[in-house]
Length: 236
Image (cartoon, rainbow, N blue to C red; front, side, top):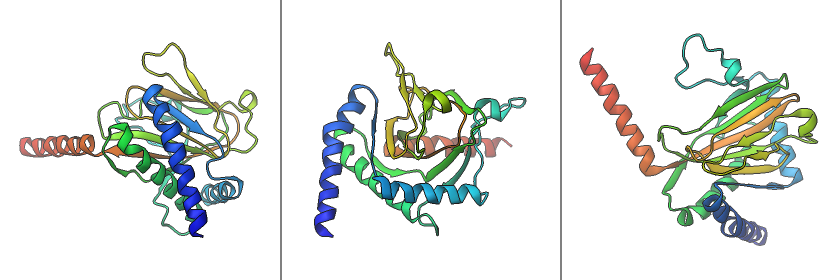
């Protein structure tokens, strides 16, 4: 077991230093295939499918939604949030542990202070043409720094099933189309450098997303929020 652990750590270190960091610094995004391997990937998929079949996924919410705006016209996914410590999420926890290790290896070379992340968002687009319009994950400096998405879709055919994640890298003359293929891990900057959309999906499309926080930006965002709440309370 110690040998296997050493081998895994070595692979993650090589991936972080040789591929992830250079790609994020140069183009702002990166993806790697066969991240967990077939067996572990299938275990994660099985747990996500059970969450879905048990009715644990609910309509994704919109930040600052205006009245009169139809949610499904903006995002059509169903989601739930997990820590990976809940019963039946052991394989998801293994996935999160590996992503955490990968990000921790990258931190020193990305010029960021990343010490925390969100819970994992388990998402399903039900295959009825649902998508998510072009948006930025963190447009207002809320602390989210790196977005990581793990895809779980076997035998995905983008021409037939749609569901591409299209990234519009800021200042670049191209777009990047990412197919949501089984056992693929995608990473990209969460801020305005990477507007992106999920194109309409015509087959059930599963993914798990986590966001890593820049600790300084996150602390400032919390300070501004608490100040606003305090001012609102004193004026009422």
